[in-house]
Image 1: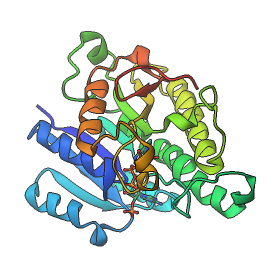
Image 2 (image 1 turned 120 degrees about the vertical axis):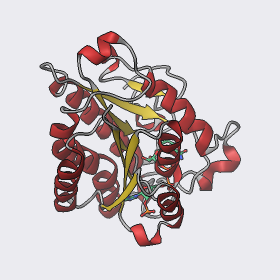
Image 3 (image 1 turned 90 degrees about the horizontal axis):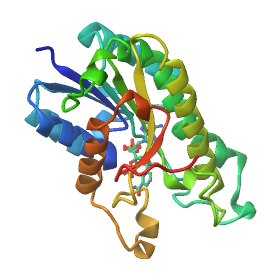
Image 4 (image 1 turned 135 degrees about the horizontal axis):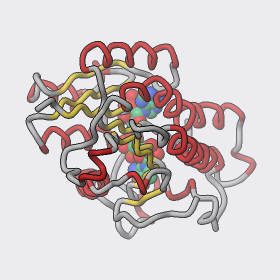
Length: 261
Ligand SMILES: NC(=O)c1ccc[n+]([C@@H]2O[C@H](COP(=O)([O-])OP(=O)(O)OC[C@H]3O[C@@H](n4cnc5c(N)ncnc54)[C@H](OP(=O)(O)O)[C@@H]3O)[C@@H](O)[C@H]2O)c1
């Protein structure tokens, strides 16, 4: 049986690294490609690679650099020929590390880099990796005959509940909210374009919960139910493994409930 090929974009730490661990633990027949912008500084990813030298490859990729994305897609295409699951995990709250509390904190520079990292980068990833996803077969654990007959691989864009326009009752966090709302629109568009034809790709946006990582650290004291990376990733893996083509275009949480756009 051909190995399942999974690509995690933004795998140096946090949720992306957690996905690499979970995918490697799941099956010895899974190849994981972990991309990050500075592999030599990603010490935990390096030691994971040493534990799984056959299964885990690390590729340098800054998601704001379209040329690097295109080159990475060629490297992956030449080595593996297809991708069954791609997770766009890299993200940032704001270059200052804190979301804007109001208009006084808004800057074009802050908006620009947050949008490029959280929304533009994942869409350019989809552009270059769609042909490989369209050759994929789906992820291990998905046994539904419907699913397999559609040859549906999976694209997960890691979003955030605060990207929901409907759910926004507090305001603030302009850059992050804008970037995740834009990412959700990209997911919806991708689900339509990549849902046509026989080789479908299931495209979803996901909210991981509030997770104990560097990104959320300034706000931990206000969070009653802070997830560990492991718990959040395990729940999201269950959701991913349960997906069908009918779920494509949805904005799902770690517990599989659907969020409004
Ligand atoms: N943690 C939460 O509570 C939470 C809640 C909702 C949504 N999310 C989303 O979950 C995703 C993962 O976040 P996290 O919590 O794991 O955050 P994290 O621990 O701060 O990790 C962020 C990751 O993004 C990478 N990254 C940032 N800019 C990049 C770039 N230009 N190119 C490549 N990689 C880049 C970082 O790489 P470096 O190591 O090189 O900096 C790091 O691997 C994000 O999309 C975030 O918005 C998180």
